Every structure is written in C-alpha cells, then in structure tokens.
Length: 350
View (tube, rainbow, N blue to C red):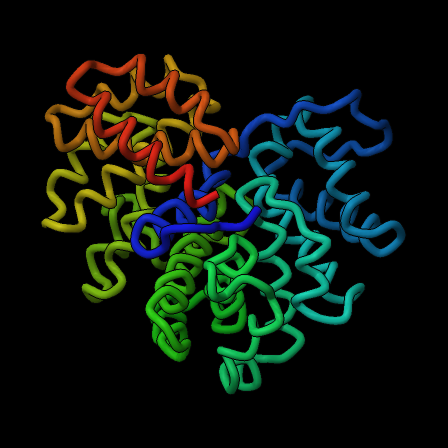
C-alpha cells in the first residue's frame, strides 16, 4: 500500500495509527483451519521464546511468507499468540535479516500483520548487525533503498519508524538516549516517525507484550514518560500512551479520558485520538463497541477526537471507507460531520 496525494500532518497521523495497531491485540485474521504441530505453553514467562524458536525456524527453512501463513492460520485459535502477535512478528523480521541481503529486500517480503511488527523487527535485526556506532553514523542512509520517500509511502514510514525500535534495541531500551539519536535523522517526518517508534517499543517491552518491563513506564503515573519528555516529542508520545494507561486502569475508558483531560493543549487532542484508536482496536473494528467507548468522553472535544482516532483506524483496517461511513452514521448527529470529514481526507492518502 502506498500513500498518494496530500501529505503532511494528516498523513503522519494515519501512519501513527498504522504503527499503533496491534498494541492491545491484533485484529482477527480470517483464515483456514490451523495447521497441527505447535503447542506453546500458556505461561507468559516462557511462551514468547517458544513462538520465537518456531517462527525463526520457518523463516530459515521456508521464508517469510510461509511464517506469516502459519501465524495467520493459528491466530484465531490461540489466545496467547493473539496477545504476543506484535512481538512474534518482530521475531520474523529479525530472522529475515539473516536471510535477505539488506533492508530493502527484506521489506519486499514483508507483511503488515499485527501492527507492522515485521518491519520493526527487520530494523532491530539490522541494528544488531551493525551495532550502535555504525548505525548512527549514517542514519539517513539506512532507509535510502526503501522506495517511497518522496510520497511518504507506508514502506518508507515503516522503515524510519522502525529505526526508533532499532535504536531502542541498541541502547538497551534507554528511551531518552534513543530520542536524542532519532534527532540525527534529516527531516521532521523522519524524526517524528523515529520517535514514535521509540515510544511504541517502550510500550511493547512492558512485559505484557512479551518483553521485559520498561523502566520508563510507571503504573502510578500512567501517562509517563509523556509527562517528562520535551515538547518536541510529546505529540508522538501521547499518540501511543493510552494503550498502556488503559492496561493500568483495567480498560476503564472513562478514567483514561480523565487522564487525557489533564494534559495541556495542544497535546491532549493526541491523547484523545490515541484513545479512539484503542476504542476501535478493542472493539475489533466493529461499530457498536467503538461508538460506545467514544461516547464515554464527557464533552465534545473528548468525543470528537476519539472519533477521529477511531475512524482513522477503521479506514486503515478495512482499506476502504465503507465501514468508516457506517461508523459515522451510527454516531450522534453532532459528531457525524467530523467523522465524515476525517474519512474523506484520509481515504485519499491510501
């Protein structure tokens, strides 16, 4: 999929939605009967290692396409795989680095399943191969071979966004060091996408998604580190952080709306829109659940921004405006206009 037509803030906004999809659980795949043979334990402490071994082996023997075919066939019947799906696709991407000759070739074999985790994994594997010093010596060159820079293609975004994941990998998940390293990229889109990858990786390593627990997540302060980073990073942080905050408050959307309400202008809009993405994701991009969750906002600002985040996720998930228009039609009349305008703007980007 390539982005064409208008670029800029809206393009980056929808790409952030693409990047964030899957943090709370990937959308259900529609697949044939699952193959037999894999029985990973349900213990969260050891399950990921089992999946990693399985999918590294498939990539080595049969390639990336076979690994994704196997994952999608098993997904619906395996709750632990659903929880760990993004982390599993990181592993597939990391394994691809040893099979293919470079980033651009590995990307050609990619799949956007489970929040585009494959591409993040490719970048992590590439970073481990180079090491931090060599990686940072020519950050702009890493994604130079991936097509679409001039038109902000999804592949190009996934590359520079994946650099954020990669830099976290070679800095021992030190968020503040990684953000400073992202500043070494040329271009505001690239720097923002890289920072967004840093913040996403910080959420993935919270232990609940198959990684270790980040020192930059605080249950007693659910919007940290967004409250501590510099102003230039805050929007990218708040675009992600509600997924963690929801976990802290056990899925209570009303509580996270209240947390976002305390965020200063202009960043609280990103916080509400992030919550809209979560509303769509948790509702498996079905209209009733998404509408009900956004309705938990207590004022027009909260609800309207929630709708913006949700409809962006709908358009991305379905690659169509049909279901997005159904979402808009199901909303209160006061929210329908912002929903339809957002839908019309974003469809042109795909």
